[in-house]
Image 1: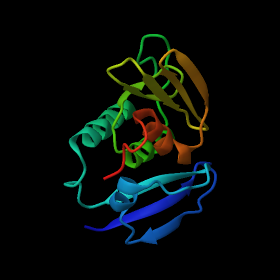
Image 2: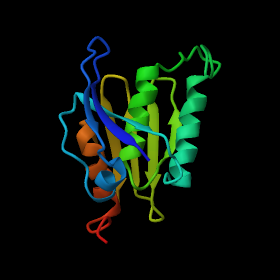
Image 3: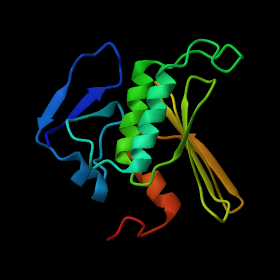
Image 4: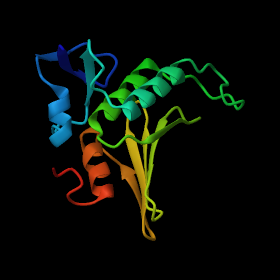
Length: 166
């Protein structure tokens, strides 16, 4: 298995890519999320997907289907999704140990949702230029923009302290 972790600036106009050959992304994401500047996204390349969990595979397949959505896909003039947005969403999925439910939105964003049995709810909405979260914990609602590098921690926080401890 040969994996390469690239860091690509989110700005489409820039072509700078830093390659880190031989870096094992699975080992990195299973224990800790690297603290990256929010202007970067992960692009992961692998010749072997046998180690990818079924939930992640399913979500990646959904994203591939989102690529096929054409103008007016929802009957209300919703626009298709850019390749950059799809790749950004894939990068987020690869960084998460618990996979969300994912949905396309008419706001040119991809929405990730988590809900616990007690009604607590976390939503992460990924736009091409920014990311927002909305959560309800008990009766307390909060929302704000969030840096790409903080999503892993937000999901971890949602599931509670020690969730990722082995």
